[in-house]
Length: 374
Figure 1 (cartoon, helix red, strand yellow):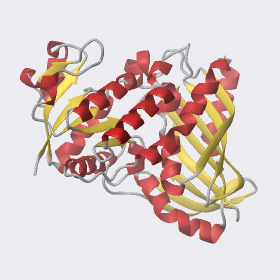
Figure 2 (cartoon, rainbow, N blue to C red):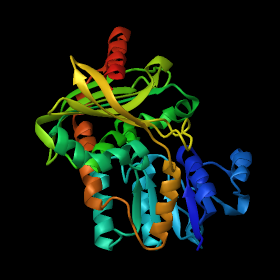
Figure 3 (cartoon, rainbow, N blue to C red):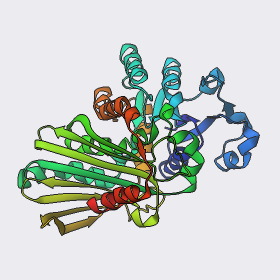
Figure 4 (tube, rainbow, N blue to C red):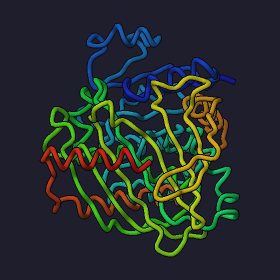
């Protein structure tokens, strides 16, 4: 069976969705909605098979024209985060499945309001929050291995996450809204830090105890951080007493710093290391790697490195949309999503009092430290 999909936002994540549909099938894009007139991007839209009759423009208040919903089974929402809360409710109220990128909303109040709407309306099986690092193969490998690792090497003592993304044109194009807090900012853009660890090991996240904000790339933004260091406690069945998470996130770095990875250290001195590749650099036989080793004198000594290959996160995503349209939601539960987002609301409560560090020496020290940690 082929399902009809309406898409809101023809940008960053739509292109990955489109490639997944081309590979998997079972989904046909029949409607599209954007903020600008069709003529302003006719060439790009027609390249995706979207003609003028299929295209609609969002209303000034962010609401969706009723005609957009006609004949679609599901709606993919991947426009700026500030529109999501309203558009989720509109989609569900029309009896359509809602597939949402990144977040339900950008503040705790809005987020809780959406969650209450979903629960009261009985929409739990009709809304799917897409957190695409759950579908990355290093994440899956960790989730499949974590029980055995803890059984063999003891509980998790610490976790370091480094996400340093090189300056690119896509982020430059989105910079006008990407880093602003009315869209959630950089910390929410990298919710993936928390989803990976939660999916694999189900920790409870403590309050943020140490927070540093950095101006990594002034061409992106100077009023909002383009680099963040956050440290917080972790607890749970697989974690030792005093376990901690240290997360370093930045956009707009030099190529020499660019890296995406996670390092978990266990009580025995063993470690597990996840290395991720950006979606634009992945190929079917290059999906990142998973490494097991031991720490010796503060240095990693690898014992097993497993290059990963298989389906892309886009292909897995499309299969889960097909399942959703067929009545089976295999995504995260509403309560699990709430657990993952707890550090986001903590961050928003404390970031305002922090000065953004722009001294180049300190910025370089932050990047150097983060690149070496994983």
